[in-house]
Amino acid sequence: MTTTLKRSLRAGLRWTSLRMRLVVVFALVALVAAVSASGIAYWLNREAVLTRTQDAALDDFRRQMQDTAAALPTRPTKDDLQRAAGDMAAGSPGYDVLLEAERERGKPIMGYSDLDTFTRDDVPESLQRQVARKQPLTSSNDHEYHLFWQRTSIAGTPYLVAGTRIIGGGPTGYMLKSLDQERQDLNSLAWSLGIATALALIGSALLAQAAATTVLRPVQRLGDAARKLGEGKLDTRLVVSGTDELADLSRTFNRTAGSLEKKVADMSAREEASRRFVADMSHELRTPLTAITAVAEVLEDEADTLDPMIAPAVHLVVSETRRLNDLVENLMEVTRFDAGTARLVLDDVDVADQVTACIDARAWLDAVDLDAERGMMVRLDPRRLDVILANLIGNALKHGGSPVGVRVRIEGEELLIEVRDHGPGIPEDVLPHVFDRFYKASASRPRSEGSGLGLSIAMENAHIHGGDISAANSPDCGAVFTLRLPRDAEGIARNDGPGVQAPDENGAT
Image (tube, rainbow, N blue to C red; front, top):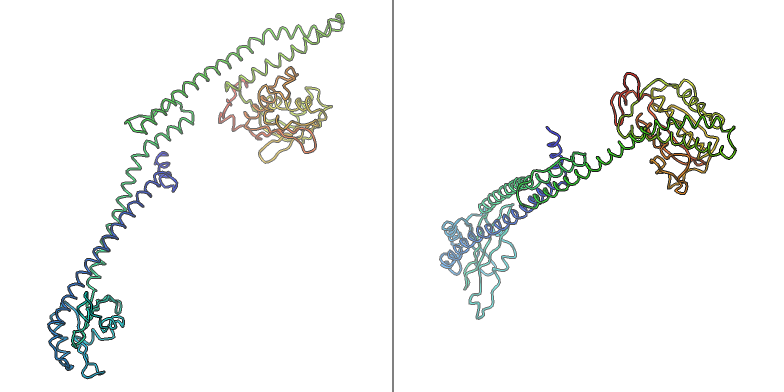
């Protein structure tokens, strides 16, 4: 499975992804619509089925009461009631009948079509009271007794119970109609509607997926192209088709990418030209500077024999020549880093000896307190370590003042060298810029002794080893520079990391 496909799947599975939200919205809309339609359809069909069954049973019961029960004697016997109830149930569309009369006042008698199925206990009390109540005769009511009905449930089965009374002293009749078949039909309808709802939900999800794919594929391509553009592939372009908003967005992206590519190319060309100019200028300056330096040194040796008015000028020329020579060397070093031609020439080094040699070569032994145990062996570029130490210690002596403490220790797989001075420290607004090129803390001293490149070159030499340098202020006083280097930089040289090249056979840098 490709990386792009995996990324697409992960994006599709995230709850916050646009694809997932489209699918969820489509599904919710379909679910609400399907449930609403199914609910309305179920309710309408339920009412239609129950009303049809109910009306058919009530009409037949009313007719049976008029034809059969009304024909009974005013004081019918139990057998009369039993026979009439059986006849009514036999001719009915599936209901049982109970007939009630009085043999004498206060002595009721009853007839059942089926005593096991329907008794008076099955008739709700509220329905019995309604049936027995005599209605007042009005202009809109011509009958003292009416037919009343009620839906009830007996032992979990739905039933229709109805009752009425024969006007003029005839028997009271009740009927019990089972609605179980209607319930089964409605349950089947509910299952059908549920299945239809589920299918509608699945179909909506599939449609949402298809719509999301259609809509989001250009967005995904745009995202991939933007990601490639961010990774530096400035020639990335989108294939544009159509005239919709996404096509306009793709065209805008292509125009933006083209403009960005042109600007970056122009900037790279200018940067390369500037880098080449600095390198060429530094290289061209080295030859005349070498001659000037030689002459300046001769003049310095003869300064004591010259006119006292000329001697200060000679010393000034000598110091400025040396400063210019250092600046040219630093510029050449910077151009090597920028061009990626700086190389590590690794060797096994005793750190204590290396630091001591660096301090001794610059006559700093009296101004530096060294805390380093002999025998701490590391594998790195000794020349570049010397450059780092010279810049850090020289900067501490120049701006912080002696004594400068240098502490060397090993922590795990790292070499730590801490350079601490006892000066005023580094202002907080300067700390973030101490390693910037040509940065000087005081703008009022543009002609300070330093070039503003020393700490920058030290940081580049640390990076080429795979290390780093940090600057901070000590809680007591003064500034603290901490150099961290790997104990073995062999892996850096072998892997040809950024700005690193393997040494040539002669160990040239």
